[in-house]
Length: 354
Image (cartoon, rainbow, N blue to C red):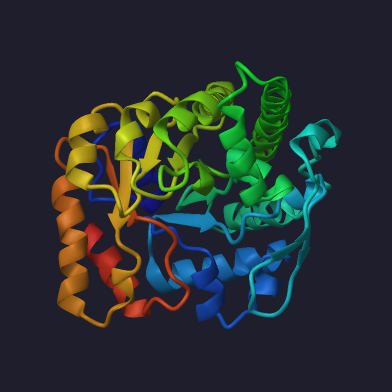
């Protein structure tokens, strides 16, 4: 099997030759190629070339077209500053109140923001590696998108007030506007990720870091966020089937309390954060969804060959039981991760058989 066939086999609940491996890796690729981040995330051809060179260096099975999270929201009124080796910094939000959310329109993925950068990078990777390596397209989750447009602190304060919507008219109106904005962001994500599939992506990533239980309660997650995750994956299912592709959910943090909810979103793959106990996750939902993870990216920074090998083997031993597992990192690979550690990770996976 080649890398693409290996990943597709697992996603279809079939047995691969060896365990596929796909670290959550984007900006690290620019670092090892000595390309300024601001060049990497603003030029699709550069992004594609950098990711291709990183794949040549490591030989993993999934290439992830990823950098920052503002490439969509910049097409929805958000302004950022981009300089040198810094990731974009928000300088102006799109709205100053949830009540203004109606003015935010669904952007064109082929014209607005930096979505075209990712589409060009995916198309480049398809031209070089299509059918040989799985290509993972990015996607900022709708709750995080709302926070980019409005502001994290402002959004969370309003979410607290919305809990009184049944007894307060202002809170009720705020809640209504929140849902309207979430609908807009969901439709935006659907249009962008559909364009990624057409460009050549085989896996679609929905990453919603702000939806973490490190930030919101299970009740808020289930009431205000889960319905839109479910709507996204349900709406995208026919597109996934048409393109022989799969949907992946990634939410940072220890989200053990809502694992059952994750398995019922309609996602095909759950990328398990390093804060979640992989064994518990496997026991709870491993028969319903493909698991990917969850090597701690912080520990990958250490210069200890045996420790890194042990981290990977522990995940492999737990995750592969019963099948349906891809080795990955529990969150984004740190930009300064030693190259040898990622090579060890790939080697451990490719030496491991179900």
